[in-house]
Amino acid sequence: MSKISPRPSSHRTRGFTLIELLVVIAIIAVLISLLLPAVQSAREAARRAQCVNNLKQLSLAAANYEGATGIYPPGLYWSVLTGNYQGYLGTNMGPLVHLAPYMEQGQAYNAANFLVNIYYNENLTVHAVGINSLWCPSDASISEIKSLDPATTFYDPVIAPQQARMAYSSYGGVVGPWFTNTWSIPGTGSGSHPNHGKIKGNQLGMFNTCSDVRLASITDGTSNTMLFGEHAHGLLTADDQLGWQWWDSGNLGDTLITTMWPLNPHRKVANIDAGLNAKIFIVSASSFHPGGGNFAFVDGSVRFIKDSVQSWPLEPLHGGSCPEQVPAAAQVNVVDGYSCTWSKYYAVTPGFQFGIYQALSTRNQGEILSADAY
Image 1 (cartoon, rainbow, N blue to C red):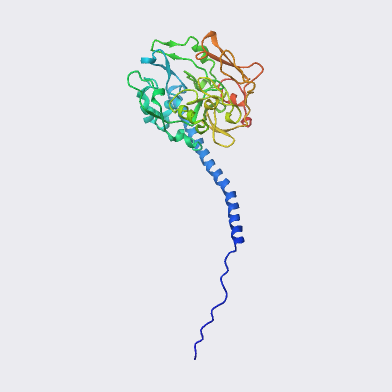
Image 2 (image 1 turned 90 degrees about the vertical axis):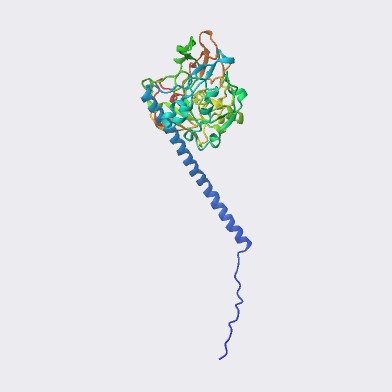
């Protein structure tokens, strides 16, 4: 019996045509374009949740500090410089350093030398302590620790200025609608500024110069009073990023922010001088979160405030006894003819009132606010 070999099939496997490949690629591109915003939105939601948690930790640390000491930490205090700068005053530690032990950052607190000015070489170590819980993950540049110019930054009367590195913070204590500047340095022979009491009486927020706010003074309600807010490092110019938002400094624009200007002012106003050698974008609250920013309140809650929150009228900008320009709804003058540096006194312009944004930043002005107002 002969074996017959099967005939090879004449059928060939058919491949994709060029048109079919293009159609498949187009479908994949459409699916990616639909999926990418969802992925980005999910990532931003995670970053925002971490930012909320950071602010929650700050508010709880402040509550524990108040429970232990009876007051909230000072916003800024001044110390006397010596040596070549004898007779001058220099910035000292801000509220975040005082709160460090209550945030499981005892090593950062221990690195700070409160007996000398922040600019002196004894405090070089604390400058470079990077604390992850002070960095909002939406602000990509905030975790960079940058080198500072010793020739222009540090004034040590004994040791030559040394190279230092600085860590930064995404968060600042809320001073209210305006920042007042005064000094009181007991035990040094300097005493207090003649207008110290008047200037302190002009402070409306939770933090300010020489502030010592007690829980009983928060008569607007702890759930209606801002404690900390965001200020986005990456929205500043490269030079401003280097010189501002220092995590350990109490300066306005470092770890203190004001509601004088609207939330995310870079979308609404020009970046003019806001006093004390800082500009509006430096001293105001801002964030990379779409549509607004996060704020911690005294009661421990953290809420997202929208860019659309009602703020007081800005235009026309104007000045008073000082060269500083302020919104139409505010006035700035000098008490008793003293200098604009130490004796500026603010008030609401007659016929105007705080916006909701400003009202949320005051602790004792008697505003009645509901949750749907912001």
